[in-house]
Amino acid sequence: MAHQIEERLKEELPSITVARELAEGFLTEAGYRGAHEDVLIVVSELVTNALLHGDGPPLLRLSGGASRIRVEVGDSAAELLPEPREPGPRDGWGLQVVERVCARWGTSPRDDGKVVWCELVAAG
Image 1: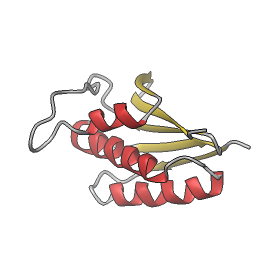
Image 2 (image 1 turned 180 degrees about the vertical axis):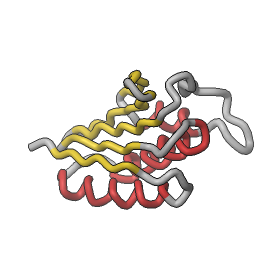
Image 3 (image 1 turned 60 degrees about the horizontal axis):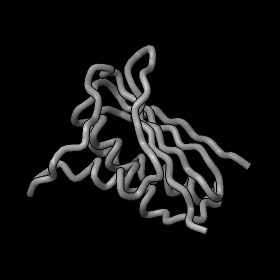
Image 4 (image 1 turned 120 degrees about the vertical axis):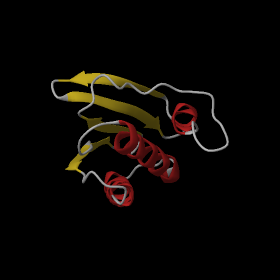
């Protein structure tokens, strides 16, 4: 059975914690068998990027079930697409982490901005 939640977050840094809490509850409800911490890290990174580099309040959407989870974070800045960069001592690690723990990731345009999405798959 596929589950889905969608939540408009406030345009403030405490929304990262709110997003992680929503994701924790979602993963339990969906019965996701994969590494929950990987999903929580990805949610944190994508929401952080939306807050720091995007525009407007982020929209978090989670969908999936026991074997696969899709994370989507939307914002209003269609022209500001994320790109992995060489990590340094202070930043640049976020999308590197997303690339390593996700089966795939990308961006999709929306009428009012963009969505950065990724998919995680439970092993086995």
